[in-house]
Image 1 (cartoon, one colour):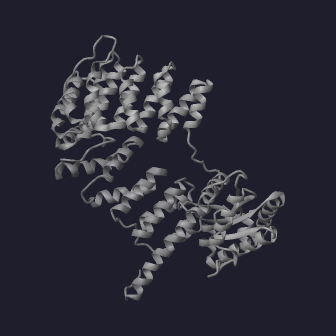
Image 2 (cartoon, one colour):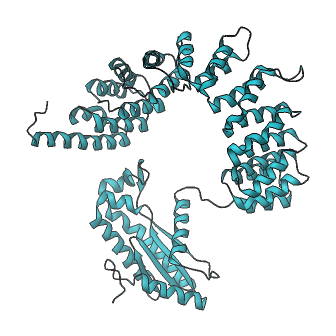
Image 3 (tube, rainbow, N blue to C red):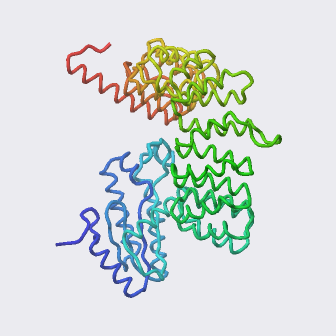
Length: 536
């Protein structure tokens, strides 16, 4: 059985692994992993035949450039070269330069002049991908544990760097170094919180050192929050101890961290902290009971939502707001009447927080309060427990809210995104009108909403958006791409309607999305014609 690549004729994986083992045993020489940057989009754009030609040519260039050394073809656009000395490394660099010089020959004249191809990348974003280049990753001559897989991982990291992408490296070794070298507080805080965001369990030991040592309370509070994000058994014990820290800011973060870490079970542990000497800790505990989902703590939250904070200098409104936030997270329907009473009680403060909490709880009680105010749809409104009649009234209010500014618009869209009934035709007509008004993310959300309800695009939709493009209004490239995707999936329009303002537009990303929409629309029309239907 021969072990050669059918595409390049070079030694294949069996031979490569044997050569790597020899290298590891002898410990002499260097291994180079060679692959092509952004080859897949090129392959998709120009086709497999030309893609195969590129791979074959790279194999030939490697053989020509390092004739006295091993060159193997892993598969696809990945190669392994093994050699030693400066002659080998110079030869590999020569291969890279030679490939760069010949790569342009695989492109059309127009793409060469543009400096690459405009196409969709792996994430579906339309962009200019530069002319093909290769990435070369050399092993450390002292490295003993080498495999095809480890080399591939290194190559992937190298390509990310070449494309300006971030490389994920563990943070905690740097944190340990920073703590022991007396690095500045702000910089060390950033490292502490980075360990938490990345949930690095390896950081727990050094975070424990910070939390239990003679370090600034600013560092200790960040360490407590980071431990909450990490959330293993060791961090939980440290957080429980931190609830007794001498500094209220550290205790506050420990409360938050404990909720993140153990969830519902943290609820009962927070009750003693409702009587903490610090308003910050008390407020964190009130919110924490709700965030933890500990519904047995509801009566504590009710009491604090109507009680007064201890001491004239303490802000009662903020403590009540924290209790209401906790109730909001639990969202018990049984509390709707209690909350509605707070909303209408003369002299109760904070009334706006009570209203927001009522909206998060939902039921017909909340619907009636929203409709009584007859203003706009609130940013968060739980539709659970509302009858058909109230839902229809709220639907009408939402469509009216669309014209009341950005904050009202966001709430109205959120309501309609979660609306369980079929839209009235008047709602659909109103939503389509806003294609002529909205831009950016709001426009994109509107399009996705229409698409999710299988609402067909029509000529009026195309005309509204085309008019805005022609007048130079900025809607946003991703928003327009979403619009064209909706037109393709749901549209009852002719492909020709996309010609002037979309397919012939200045923005290539929009034109590319229009091209895909044209294909889908035309395919649908042609299928219908084959089935004997008449196309208008």
